[in-house]
Figure 1 (cartoon, rainbow, N blue to C red):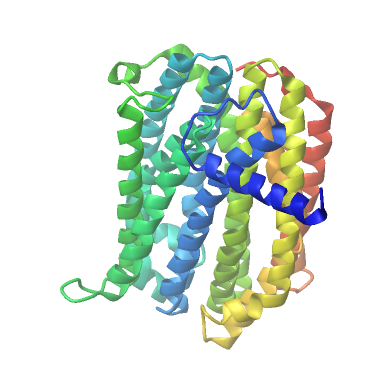
Figure 2 (cartoon, one colour):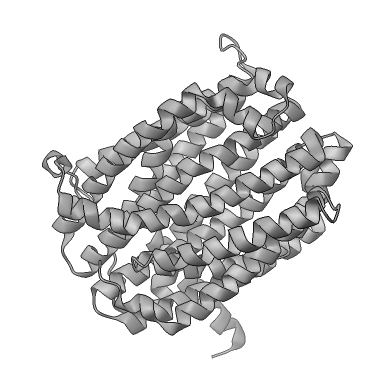
Length: 472
């Protein structure tokens, strides 16, 4: 066989796998080629997160043209709403672990019931968060360091986002259930629908068109909430119509305290894990705002959106590890679970290495599309380049974290995050920014340093293998 024939054969094989990953057919990920299993899950999961990345950039693109105050308000609100994201991701991780384990055991009825019980928990928690968040939105922004002029023009944005946090919670949770079942294509479709609606509505409601009035920054919040609400309706339709592997029935919404306790036992460390990270990001955003004011804050928020644009697809790929670990542990194949994680980590590291090179070269050109204010642009370029320097380690670290979470061992990455963020990242950022006088640049440098340390620690603990013994 010639080299050209070999290349053509490999290309055809890859194209065939791509088609298979997008055809919505149920797959058994506990047998056969591990490489094939990773690719079948990773492609829709990466595509799912790609459009999330596109929306984040589109959103900040339109908002940034409203001025630095609007950009700062959106960024600070995102820092606060990450608490809701942390709860949503934490509960979805628990749902993914339980659903994947039951699917691996071939017990789909128990998987469906676990999904419904996790939704009951999510509904209760969201009510407790969204009401005070809506009422005290102005106080939150002032506490975060927003300038009074920015708060006056943007507090309605924060109120709508906080008041509509239920759709954020459900969108993430229900997609976690789909991923646990190995139904990555449905998770992708749900998020794509939500974000396509966001992208269409965002410019319409911000700028107005014909009979549609211009709502400014408030329109951005309206577009986000409406779009995600449409995505949640789509998810619920497919979970209740009885045609997916996980089938919701109303009787499973009655509390089952044994399952609820099991979900909470996995979810609270997972939630704390992301709250620890989110809390650190809030402190960093405050340090940037206090040391560099609105110019640095606006530049930092643009940089974070650009960084997340590339991190989210990598997070999507790393989600494959959670599904593969959960299902293979359920099928009593711990060695296959470990091999799946290592292969996923290799793919993610290569992807992130390529991305870091792209950002190193093209960041000034990309940032120029978001702002014409030179000081803001300079901060954005500097932050993006510094933060993206640790991309390769981010890629490995997020796979390790998802592997632990997929096994139901949510406490291990929580402990690693606690020490990495609160005993390294925050003290280092503060020391560099204020005592050493580097200002916002010191905060930027602390991010890749801490993330690299966290990734190395997670890999060392993963190789010890205690996660394989976790019972779910």
